[in-house]
Amino acid sequence: MTQAVLVRRIAARPAIVFEALVTAEGIASWWGPDDLPVIFATVDPRVRGRFRVRFRRLDGGEHECAGEFLEIVKPERVVMSWRWDAGGEPDEAGNESRLEFNLRAIDTGTELTLIHSALRSEASAHSHEGGWAGALEKLLRRYPQPPAALGV
Image 1 (cartoon, helix red, strand yellow):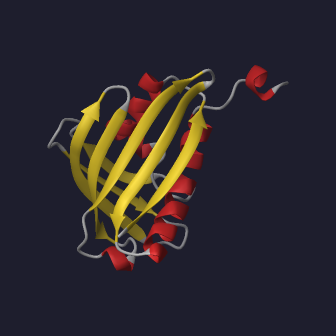
Image 2 (tube, helix red, strand yellow):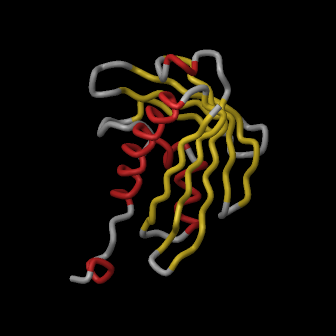
Image 3 (cartoon, helix red, strand yellow):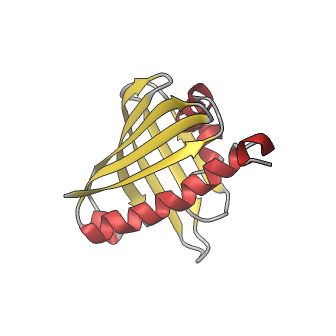
């Protein structure tokens, strides 16, 4: 089994980024790798609470993931189980993996570390890394750097 790890710096405080991880509105604003809206997101943000997210890809395919919140430490950490209920990486059919978000305050906002582990293959980890990279780009655009942070 293997994992995908991504680190991004976001121009928002950890408490704000945390809300984008545990609310339906927040998740709907950035999940899915393509610049298309989430079709629906339902979230019960408590330990053993469930989530379900459905999104469309540019190729017209729809993907749906679901799982359970395993750990919530506001505003530092969210851990979820993850499975594909529709679409997704074929290698992961029937598999439940683990998704971790770790948030650390930095001078310019938050450093987010995403770890998607317990994936079945290197090819699946690579596919998930690409998908999460696209989604995280949408999250970064949600909280743009102010001009001063860009050296302007």
